[in-house]
Amino acid sequence: MRKKISIVLSVLMMAGALGACGGKTTDAPAVSKNADAPGETAADSGKTPIKIAFSGPMTGDYAEYGQNFYAACEIAVDEINSSGGLLDGSPMELLQFDDKNSQEEVGAIAEMIASDDSIAAVLGHFSSGVAMTAANTYMDAGIPLLSASASHPDYSGMGEYIFRNNVLISQEVETVLQICQNSGSKRVGVLVLKNDWGQGALQAMETAYEQVKGKVDFEIVLQEEVMDGTEEFSANITKFMEQDCDTVFVLTMYATFAPFANQYRTLNPDIKMFSVGSAYSTELINLGGSAVEGVRMCAGFNPENPDPAAQKFVQQFNEKTGHDPDNMAVQTYENVNMIAQAIERAGSAERSAIKDALYDTDYDAITGHITFNGIGDAQKNLLVFEVSGGKFVELTDMAILPWDEFVASL
Image 1 (spheres, rainbow, N blue to C red):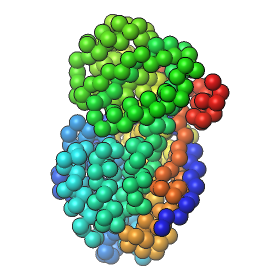
Image 2 (image 1 turned 45 degrees about the horizontal axis):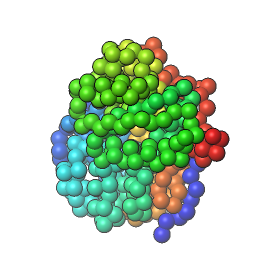
Image 3 (image 1 turned 90 degrees about the vertical axis):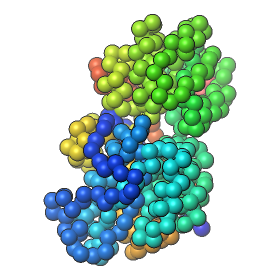
Image 4 (image 1 turned 90 degrees about the horizontal axis):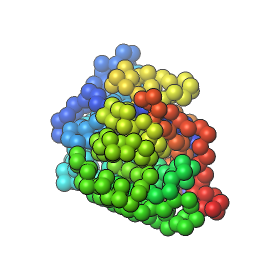
């Protein structure tokens, strides 16, 4: 039975990025190279390791995300093992599974993980659709799943073994609607991916907009769907321009956003473009260049945060990958540590014991204080960033209210 524990998580925001980083790319699990870390006494102890599975897109269109998540996992595992490991000195062992962010492939991978009794917990998967496909298998097997990026509202409610340490898409779109209001938008178009994630995001946006329609200073006049991987947007842009849109709310990943911005700004350099954390990556800036200057979005982590623990992780991540972490990479790092803390609290690496102990999480993390509520959700605050001078700059003067307060204020 789940303990009903309230969540309070204040997130310190960072402007950073996801870029390609090194990592194994095999479909079969691979043990992370933790033995290479200096001072790692637990890995050399000869004691039976406690195995944790990581599953994400190490290859394919979303490989950059998976590789960054895995790098964050490796940093956390190296720290845990160099500090003596878990319980009686057992090392933590990280196993890697490449699910390619594919709902077709993740089922077999989830079965492989769940059926291996030596695996104590799972970290991943990237998208909500893939995570939710795997979640039923993990529930049946009674193995905890902790995600850093599954934002669909229904994800954590799938069962008592399912957790997440990230914001819901509903909170992200509510924040962007406030960005529209605060930025003087009048006629807003929406560009959204035609996939499970995009449809969930669109539904959340429509639900939020219905609560403020006719009360805010802008109206949503057009919605356009595009397939993931689209590179030509002239037809969509023409429709937005025919509707006299001054703003486009872009619900895509950075790889779709960047070419869209390049093509739109060629025709209308004054168009405003806003987005959610899925596009928050230095790759957006690398690919979009001057076309993404002025883009505003919400995200969950700021690499310039002066907190010593945050700066230590940023430095370690930069050394491993060559770029700053974003909020999802940081949350992945936190997730490894929360699994480790749950094992220590439980005094056991049994799956059910870890699950129970996760509900007792009381963790002063890089992004703030974390506890879980009765359905495994962590509540997180979002701040707003703008691309300025080729980097993400936090807009500290933009007031973002809790959604109920914003609605009541209109």
